[in-house]
Image (tube, rainbow, N blue to C red; front, side, top):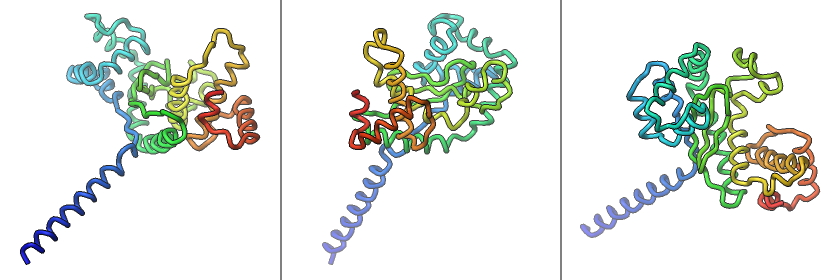
Length: 257
C-alpha cells in the first residue's frame, strides 16, 4: 500500500512537471515584447531624473548610442557634455509637448504587440532564417520613424501620432502625414527590417525600375505577413499580379529574384 502511494505521488509530480513543461513551451516565441525605452527617455528629458539617465546608459547602451549619434546627431556618446546636450536639446517647448503627447497616446501598446506577434510569427514560418529582433520604442525629434540595427528595431513614436496631429502640419505634406499613424507601426517595422535583411545587390549599377521593384517585393511580402494591404503602390500591384500568375512561388523564392 505504501509503495502504491509513492507511485501515485510520483505520477502526480510527473504530470505536474509535464504540465509546467507544456506551459513553458507554449509561451516560447508567442509574444513579441516591446521595450519601453521611451519612458526612461521621457523621465530624464522632462524631470532631469539622473537615475533614468543612468539606466539608459547602463541597461540600454546601444539604444542610447543610436539615439544620440544616429537619430539626433548630437555628437559621440562618450563626449563629456553629451548628457547635457541631450537634455538641453529637448527643452524646446515643441519637443516637450511632443513627449507629453507620446506618453498619452502610447500609454498602452498591447494592440501593437499583438499585431507584431502574429506578423513576426508568420515571418518565422515563411521566411527562411528569419529571427525576431529586439524591438524598442523611443522619442526622436520628427526625424527617422524606424531605426534598424543588428537584430534591433527602434520605433520613434513621435512619428506615429496620427495624420491629423497638429504639430505635423508645419513639417509634412498631406501624403506624408497619411502614413504617420499608429496602424503603420507594425508594417513599417517588418518592411524596414526586411530591407536590412535583403539589401539590393549592385544597387549603384541598378536602374530605377529595378530599385522600385525590389522595394515593391518587400512591400508585398510585408502586406502578406501583416495580413492587410498597407502598401498599395503600382509596383506592389504588379507583384500581386505576378504572384497570382505563379501561385506556387513561395516568399523565399520571390526574395531571391
